Length: 153
Image (cartoon, rainbow, N blue to C red; front, side):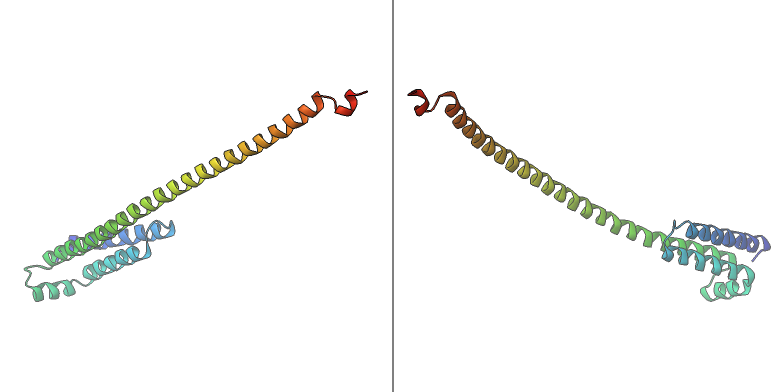
């Protein structure tokens, strides 16, 4: 493995660790995702510091050079992460759809309840207005006309 590739791996791994630690401090990344990236960076550092491990694994799997093995390792690890993230996004999309439906149902139920309460409130006001108007009419008829005893005087 060339010195340039080793330096590139170390720089990329350290930059990834720094970036992940920054995101962890800002609470922008889940711990499971952070662990993946930190482990990924550590493996890249190990391959860069000890190229014999990469060369041994490359010869075991039939690769011509260790750099080909490392590139394939990186591609496979990233594809694995991409696949797991797409599954997670799909599941979250299903949850969002379910929650949206539940919110719509609850909104409609609340709207119906408010309409029923307003109808009941209007009905009770109408009945109280009718009884109040009957009472006031009864009082007005009594006050408009003098009592029979007074008319005889």
